Amino acid sequence: MSRVLVTGASGMLGSQLLLDAPRGVTAVGTDLRAGDDIVAPGYDLADPARVEALLAAHGPFEGVIHAAAWTAVDLAEEREAEAARANVDATRELARAVAQRGIPLVLVSTDFVFDGCARRPYRVDDETRPLSAYGRTKLAGELAAREAHPAGTRIVRTQWLYGPRGKHFPGTILALAKERKELRVVHDQVGAPTSTLELAPALWDVLRAGEAGVYHAACDGQASWFELAVATLELAGVTDVRVEPCTTSEFPRPAARPRYSVLDCSRLTALRGRPLAPWRAALAAFLALHRP
Ligand SMILES: NC(=O)c1ccc[n+]([C@@H]2O[C@H](COP(=O)([O-])OP(=O)(O)OC[C@H]3O[C@@H](n4cnc5c(N)ncnc54)[C@H](OP(=O)(O)O)[C@@H]3O)[C@@H](O)[C@H]2O)c1
Image 1: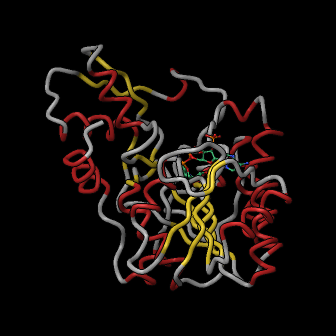
Image 2: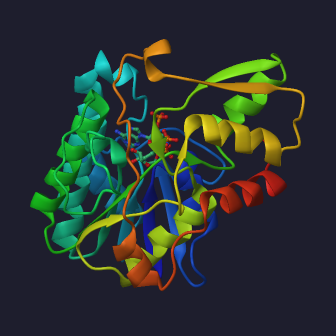
């Protein structure tokens, strides 16, 4: 595999995918907006003509990693049609074009396809039941891609991302810690904080060595947002800020979130021979190199 298209390439995950392209692979980044590393800016993937134009102008490709999405979870509640345009229509158009060319597609999806009622980590074939508009559109995108390209679509659900680019929870906590001496953070939502530095190489492995179907990919272990906030401050050496646990009901948001969305990543672990790093070690590595 020598030439691969990466969508959403100026986003938090897509930008890391470009940096982590395996040796010998040219990763061609596309996004709506122009950016330093974006070879193919200005392609709206929900427009079938633009998808064809993108593949004609910058291909041929031997694989596609689709990280572009509408990711504003709360805003999607009031603008679900726009979220669906990005998360369903664009995914369907891309999957159709990719299927015609007979090449593999990795679609990045989310733990928000689950309702959070499980008592053990979610398996790849567990029942989906999204609680939010964002989750519904991402699940519909999964189904559209599988329908358009059943033999070549690898869906990779991940969660709680942070990385060198973009806005994320550890960065927000460190910014707030400069303004306040006490923070309240929800302790009744549990997942696995996941570094794009860990996830991006795993997505490349799924593209090159995986089979069609669903994978779960998250850092090892589990934490609440409160535990993630405490660890972020500790690892960043911030000692003069108190963090208090609170409940989701004290901080109501437009979109409901799963209370428990730890993912069972055993299929990915079997493919790669190892799990992603434990979440705390991955956070320490991230903060050592990229203090937000
Ligand atoms: N962030 C998380 O915690 C998280 C958790 C689970 C799963 N995921 C999934 O991981 C993937 C990457 O997330 P991320 O946080 O890196 O997202 P991100 O930073 O928001 O980047 C997504 C990019 O996709 C672009 N895009 C949106 N609509 C498009 C369209 N119609 N055509 C072409 N490009 C379009 C966006 O452009 P604009 O900004 O101009 O709209 C943006 O640059 C997404 O599939 C997301 O659902 C993320």
